[in-house]
Image 1 (cartoon, rainbow, N blue to C red):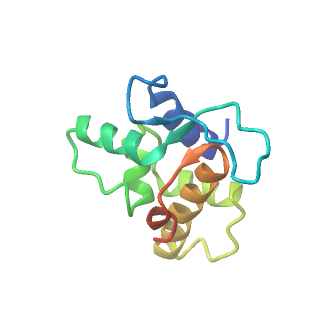
Image 2 (tube, rainbow, N blue to C red):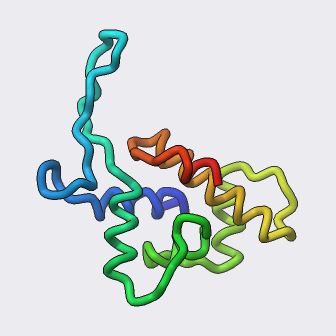
Length: 126
């Protein structure tokens, strides 16, 4: 499985069934009258906040891709982040890990939103 697939799987797997927790948001009908989505949307922020509260380490998952990956018990090494950058088509210099990490965090949040995650705009804009 891809690194992003592992991230997505860890978050979506950690979401509780609808009605048991605020981490799953029921689907809502689109305003244009199109058919309503059939799958509930996972509240990414709620899931990650809950995981962070249960974690002994103080991880800044809201800003750090490394801490986000650690929170999900995934390999956060530079090699793993470079692989993630390749998966997400990073066009920058991979030797500039600070810039790559900022881009990765933003892209992961964006991709989670595109794949059924409810992600606040402020998390995608960091």
